[in-house]
Length: 357
Image (cartoon, rainbow, N blue to C red; front, side, top):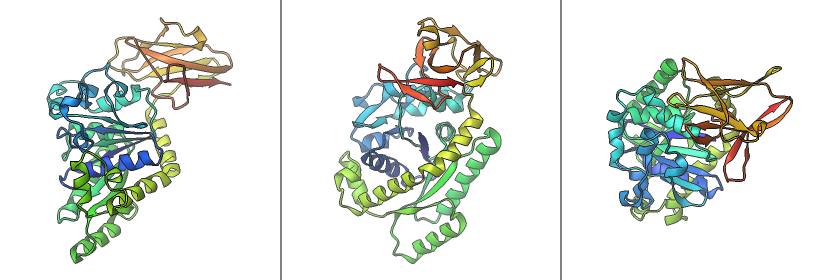
């Protein structure tokens, strides 16, 4: 699963336009896509025709309610393409979490607990470096930085890269940046000069795809549709289809880099000659237990102990074989967020799997 933030502290650069239309283009390529509206303006929700009266759960609940997961809050745009909507209440998150520990990883933790399987998760961020933006960046392994053709764009990219450096130094969290030229009319000399400067400074991070200036994206958003549905023959639709294909073509390279990153950060099951040590990162949970085919899927499960660092752990003496399991976190049955090996279960979700050689 690739988790990608759309972020730039500069407003009006096309973050929401890119998030909504790219997610729709990826869905049309047969990818399972989740779009999270992480901006209190709620423009990504509006772009698909959803008003606040159309939903009761939103991104706000992912931050503040531990038992509300993505699968509880999403709206279906089309089969395989889901949206977690939001409204103005999201602006209250920063104050509500001001004294909470782990407030900058609330969104990451919620995504880990979800049993939904997606190829792509896109997170549309507000035009500021706020708690909401930091939550999105810490939940992601990639970030798309849309850049519009203005005199402040180079400064905005520099500021965004400084933010990524800060995350690397303070949090040990690396993100792969992708710079996207958005809303570009390539004819004026000033714009061509800006393009040359972007290519010179950020050649390794600059995407080949360009989103050209057109009114069709605004018209599509006004109709509550992505441009690939509103006018599939338009230049804008072709641009976003090209961008989706470019990202898909990167999957092998990005997957390896992302895997190394997450293996370093997370605690998967550790197999040893004496059995398996399971670890679970649920720092705010009151009780964590584990169940699986090694205990006949007992509803009570086996207890994990909480360490001082907030990680829950247990050691099970398991013989050679393949074991399916789930954690029971405060009564909720969840797959292991630190184990990418899963198998479908009869309830439409996924069980985590560990193999003891």
